[in-house]
Length: 289
Length: 310
Image (cartoon, helix red, strand yellow):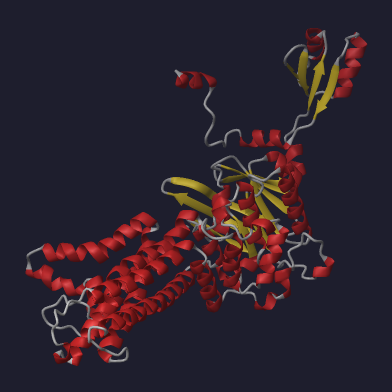
């Protein structure tokens, strides 16, 4: 069999000839870096991304301001409050927005892939990356890093807002105190992870409305339903739900009678994420696009 | 070159593509022609790995599509104009596609110019007309300067100028030695653009030959005669291997005898002729003849329609 050789001499070709890519034929091939760049272009070039991240930051800063400002000390002498408790309160005010932010980034995570299915873009994506899975990994990596960084902007920003308000009331805590730094980083990390979890669900469900319903059901509804069931098994399951583990991870609330190490919570979140991504990978590989 | 061997696609109990074998040669435009539901799109989707064949295989330049290190350099594909995120600008769509293969942004601007999208390239695709969507799809297919082009209904929605442009582009790309496969249900388009035809009907190849052979193979040329003495002429021409069909008002469609002979016989008998036209078989005739039994969704008869109208 003969392989077609392309004319790569631009000067010999008429105006209607595609030639530009031919000149750089040696470097033109699929690569991990290329896929990451492609997914980054895709993520930043649709408006839902910009809106979601803007909402995330605005919500976080706003909630931090409200929570700090509404703290009423009734003239109590805060100099008697131990430094650790002061730091905990500042940390809680700084990460309060994550509670709502997780819903925003979960929706974004679903839309990142469901938008490709609803518009037909997925066929262009998979025709360019016929092995399929590298496209999913690249999408997950870009979504995680971007969401983590925007999450960090919103938790650090929230810290700045709430520490400014609270220091006026006599409560002080530095950003680099472990009791503050850890939740600020953990909150951003959790936002990145939940976005990727939602991406996996969106890939499995392939529809925006369906994916959002499933993700918000898991993040929001299941914990409430389990809490309403007056049985020991329901209570003992609570710490292993993705949103409970995530929020426990950075110390905003606790859902367990016995304290759980942060890394156990992280493992629980990673477990949910892995289940979602593995399901997505299997189906993406197997289904016709 | 594209080679399919016993390529089969089943959806449940329905077989969309049924053990199809064909080879699409480089250097010419090959048309994939067939009625709706014949399996054209499914075949194209299997070539680029979007659909997994139920059986058989198809290779592009000797390898399965997914085994190529730079798939976009091997195959440029336009499957439908709507394989684009509507919220993204045309240029960003092309940049994202190009980035996967490390294709430079200068090439993106080149295909934008080439397809005449310059003035709308920064607008969101959601507002594009069908014709602009097709141009964007073709731009994406050309990005990697591919050796093989696969285009599903590329002239759909294009204005006459656009149709001519696509036709010239396809011919030009084939002349450069590339493999060009395009599908259409527009026979006139195929007659003008394609060198070779693969005709599909109900998932099977019913013809695979040069366009000229397929038209020639449609057989009997018809001669149309108009005469005020049509009835007398019909009797005169009546022979075992001649078929005479009476048309509207004094018109006869005659097969099995040449226009010259009809004219001579009429002159001998002193019959006046108002018209004597030799009608060559068109691709359309060939197509209708070949696909007669292959149409999946046949239009209901007029009786049925009247029934339905009540």
